[in-house]
Image (cartoon, rainbow, N blue to C red; front, side):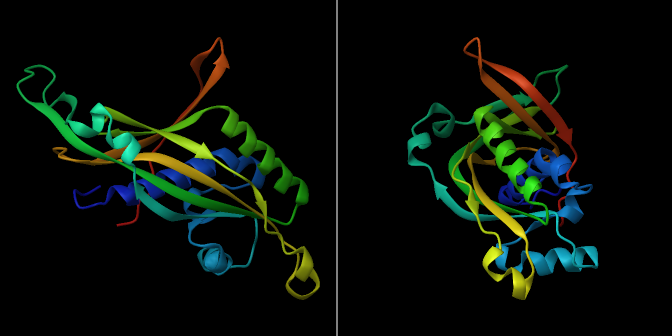
Length: 223
């Protein structure tokens, strides 16, 4: 990825990957780029139809609705000074990679579409378990520094088309938020993000964060 890629663009791709990996088995999804679209709900059905070449449900769309500077996290040491990431050469240790970061709260909402009401219910249950598992999202910079971002969840809303089923057809549609404690990072030499690591921790085991699931994905981030 080139140095002029925005960090927001990377975050959008990371959330798409996280949603795909969480719900792909339930909804029968096979490809993150074909089955998850970045768009608001009102245009998502048309976008997915154009992408697939046919009108077929069982897909996810996601949209970033808010980006707010976090004054509460701005008071932390990480926000007030540069982060020491790694040595540019681990053998000589003559130059250190450091970066400045500012805290930003990102608000996403995602929708899932299905013709099967039981699949709709399974996504609701899986989202609830995901929330219980204290999830975070890790993004690797040059395989040198993982930036771990906390995820927060909220209320599930049923937006199914039951009332208009005889005119527009019946689709079971649900929406739910994902809020990210993100950081905008600058000052990285050879800035690149090569992988996205989705990690889920469970803090209910002995009162400690226990790694329950981790998956490394090389995302397709459009230029």
